Length: 126
Image 1 (cartoon, rainbow, N blue to C red):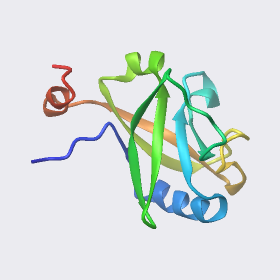
Image 2 (tube, rainbow, N blue to C red):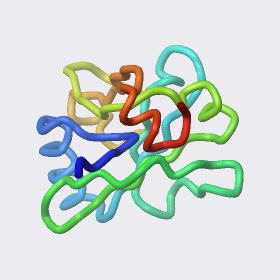
Image 3 (cartoon, helix red, strand yellow):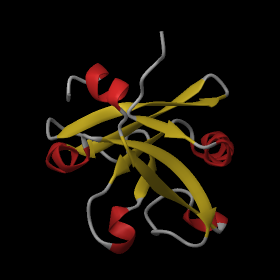
Image 4 (cartoon, rainbow, N blue to C red):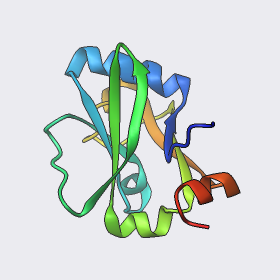
């Protein structure tokens, strides 16, 4: 039986997350909903960004090192994105100063695709 996830990570992003975890300790993402860099996934050391009852846990990214990185999104934004699968990736460039990858010359970004029929059924959206 296939495993279904709402969020995954590219190998390149997982490699950067392993490096950043060694430097900063356990990490988490919050998928922002603003414009420009405000729509980038923001990566923080666990405890630096506090989630609340208005946030949805999309899933855990397996990055190796026996570590996972949780990915959150605001509940209101999730209503717009609930039919999509997200992949956290990394590209060259400078992102937001608040996200831990900022000094590395890399920035995280989210790639999305529509959920397929099996995923829609699994997540009870069909």
